[in-house]
Image (cartoon, rainbow, N blue to C red):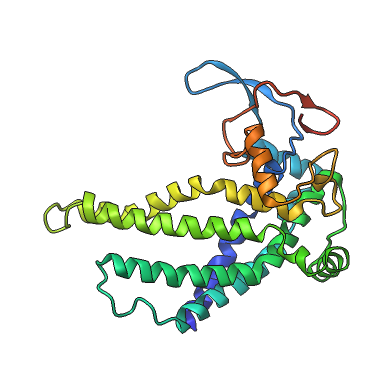
Length: 294
């Protein structure tokens, strides 16, 4: 119980601190570019047309909505984090897999990863409605709307307009991304530790390297599965009655696969992945009236 409470407090603190970053990221993911690109220089000193980064974007939001404007959707995100932590912990406690296997075996990695996959997927399924509400609260910034003004009001609005399926918008690519990322991270870490790094007893610094392998492989896995995150977020706000999810500002996708294919054709599968040194898309015009590239 004490461990769960400490996780809740830590998670809530990190959520509050990271919320402005997520807010900016989501607005970039949906294609909202309120600030025109400017000429800058890349790491090689060559002139290049650049889009404003995290701090310039956040400053623009503060200018319009004040500092509190950076925390739109925070309440529903905190609810998602708290409920997800409890569900994840309970599912892990109920699972008996992986407790008797040799910790250094591949079988143990498979069982532990399976336990974690079940726990994460269950938590994601339970909290996804809050995630949808969070994203929709955020993209209201684009059209200056107030359709989603609270958790209860948002639940009623989504159910009235879209039914139960509205709460699951974007769930499939999100689950797929989480599962693929988890397996890639754990399997890569196992093979690196087992077949590349020598035992810590032979080389003193290898033990320290092993402690970083999980973080490194996690970073690589998250980069490889980022398109799933992007598609999930776009589908969560797609055709939801907000300016940011409707034509002519945004396309209406028939499915998440259709969204994936269209983003792939446009070369936008990594949109929003970087919040710094953002290069303007080549061959596309910036539309002042829509605040986006067309």
